[in-house]
Amino acid sequence: MTDHLLSVTFVASVFFAAGFIQGTLGFGFQAMASGLLILLPGLEIPTNLIIPTIIANVWQVTATPSFPMLLRRFGVLSAGILVGSVAVHLLGFDRYGDWRSTFGFTILTMTVATLLFGERKLPLQWERRLSPIVGLSSGLIGGVTGTAFPALLYLAMLKLDRDERAAALGCFFIVLLPALISFPTNSTSNLQISLNSIWQIAPAVLGYFLGQFSYREIDGRTLGHWYKLGLLFLGANLISI
Image (cartoon, rainbow, N blue to C red; front, top):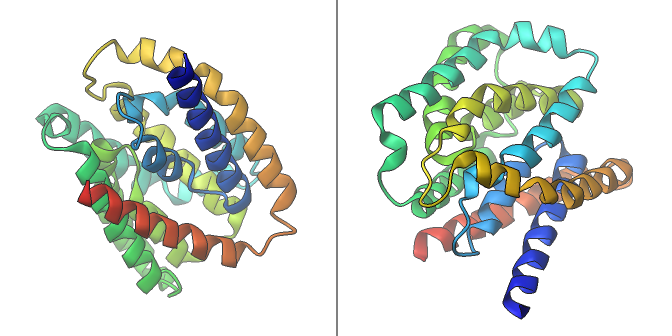
């Protein structure tokens, strides 16, 4: 009973923290929640995140007035994510290897790349050429890890404002949904796992609202740097386990 209570408390705290990060920075829910929940044995991580992450991302997508324009702008990139994630599933690449190590290596690599290149501004004329490549690579990585990491770095280099970046990432997550829903599990059905995660919406939404309330009072740049440093430590830790 005590172990179960501790597990529930840990999971609730993780979703609260991930919701707070999402509400404050406009991104980071999936990486934060996945990276911390993976420390708790027995959870089917990508599938457990489906319903709470849908809530977090769809909320931000629908709250952004410029979303239709962003959808047109990143339509090719979104299509690339869909194609890449479906290809991973059809080829069976999501069924091989150690998900924990793969996720940790991806977090570590992409966080280092973001720290090195995230402050640079991508020339606008490169956007059309790079969008298919970024979309396909994000789909391939997202199909294995559940998170489209390259797209986050790409958007950071395009210098979108917070709300536009959050809406674009929400759109990318939506097109990644087929890969998450069909993600291989070791036990019960993906639908049952997803339904069991419904209670996790409450702490995630609470953290999200607190983050929305706090983000104007918090130095987002400083928080973002601490977040990235935390991901570096987490990625290194997951690889070493």
